[in-house]
Image (cartoon, rainbow, N blue to C red):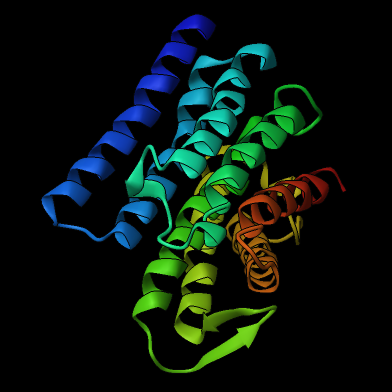
Length: 231
């Protein structure tokens, strides 16, 4: 399963990039939109990893390889569908696989449950990805923070998608007795925990500049949920 997982991991990620490239070449989506296709699509790799890998040495191969691959693409523009028009703004594509690498080490090679790492990665994928999609279209209630323009619509989108992702994982994997308000009805514990996770992820995303939210959001979210479940 581990070897098959490595092969399927590369096939999956290159398939996502290939679809984004085709959409860009066809003119159906802009480069800005195809970056989000890659961002959200690749986040689903974590679900494959949870199924195929039981050893960190195999789980980490893909993320480490894509640090190098994405760096090469950044320097040589190998995959325009995931590159930013302004090169200085594109380092997020390198930070993403670094975050995956760190989260693999926290989970498969560390004390954190793999599903908790999945919350961190999918919150980044859907929350941050959809926040950018909605935020770029919103022209109202925009504000500068840490040298980056943010929008109220994008921030609200980050919160909502993060809460949905967190709640979905909590419903499937979590023991409600380990969550916030553990003595309450399980659905209340799940909802409160999802709201806290989403709120923290949103604040971290808003306050992190230069694409570094691709690092800070999944790691902060993963560590927070781990702390909640063991407290």
